[in-house]
Image (tube, rainbow, N blue to C red; front, side, top):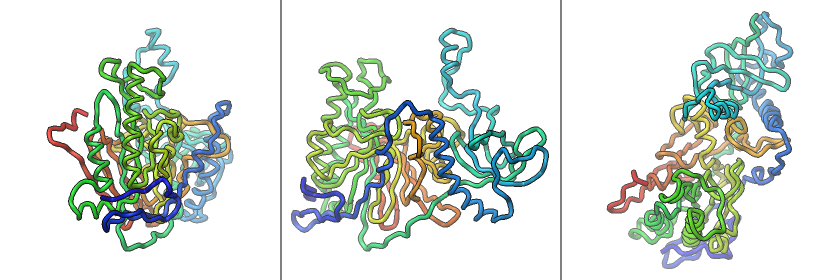
Length: 466
């Protein structure tokens, strides 16, 4: 058995867990890099224009460096008001992309639908051939033309640099483009032993559909209570568990209106809200059990009881009376960023990537991960179609530290790849599958960034029904 990270363990220190027998749980240095998500003031009197201005200001500095690396000093960088219509004065403009989409959901269209004036079909993707691409800077906007940027493979909110000139009709003819792509990546520290990080998401504790047996099997495996000595020796090299959202199911019990989202926990002791309270109790007990052996970072998700707008705050400690007794339990934000043994790990519980897929023809979540990394932004569609807290002086979703591991939670299936940017920086991309749907977790070796899935299937279980 692997014994515990007791209440006296400080997760910021490089500690050795006590042992029973001769097995020892490996540990690694940990540093939470998510402070910028916690500093966001909940002031809804601010306008959302400020976050776009802050995004453009911050990413202009990044893109100016990228422009010089790609095109040198051959082309001047100009503001939109400096362009001359009809003069082929090739230059570079930096701005924020805006997609004009006729199919984008609109409150005015919804009101028209209620009045039975213009019925709108229900859609899961809002791309149309009539979509137009527009570039905005601090003062003006201009329509982009040309086949340099595939309009259906980008989304509103992405900041980029475009090379071209203004035509007679007032459009900007694109010749080439440049993305933020990457920032400086820390050199990988080398160490001899394998150290693994486990990623899970979509545990979906509930009373309606109980996944507790498979979750219990996973918890016992993490604690070294399953398998022989070799298996337990491998498990002893797991240094951290990151749970990427949706730990509580967003569906009501079958007797209620199935599909309704629960975002709050009621004090009632009957009905669907009581199911959520029971689910939180089960989650707390499981976390307490696992935290006796390993450090755990718990991120909120779309259906978890916390604020719905990004960045999401950690779920309140009072929901976990048992787990909070352990210093190895760590409630964190969504998005979340940390450093483990010199490796930068960041990601979300899945909402930004799912939103990107809705407003583009990017085919998979893995490709959307690659795109957001290339764009240098974790949630480009916020606040346009993805709810986020208005900010005035900063955009917290800009990728500031180029990650070694970049993940999204609550995917339909496990998927992974290595993304290499133009400067040779490499990032391990991971689509962490929903555990309730797949019984699968993702495991990453910090030593070499290798990644593989592990599935917990019991006799007679049918994961397709979950």
